[in-house]
Length: 130
Image (cartoon, rainbow, N blue to C red; front, side, top):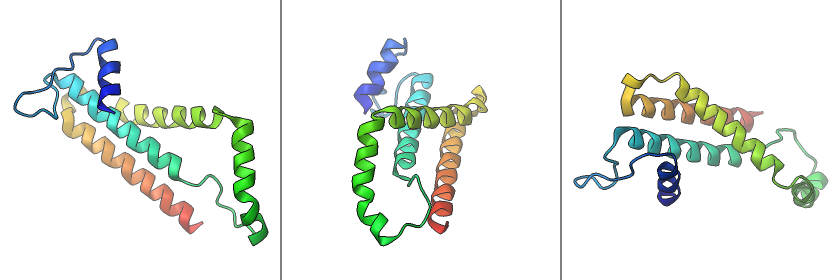
């Protein structure tokens, strides 16, 4: 994951040198900030992918045919669902970080990440209850 981020960051013109005293952190603040955002987007995307898409109750017969139906739909739809989900997740993360000002620093980014996690948890609980 870090290699993919660093390749992207270098293509985007960021310095990816790490601190000698803390090798998990980048030397340049903006690169460190983008690394935190990158991780948040990936974590948010994983939780969005894990949430079930339908919340309706199904009969036992329908439940038995669900895997077959799901695999057939995946074959037909291909990557369009995945692309739509990636776009939705990216837009959610970008919207959350767009309200963050430059003075907020890493603490502000961490607050945004926590709010995204709380929002995703609340959505998962609502779907579990419904």
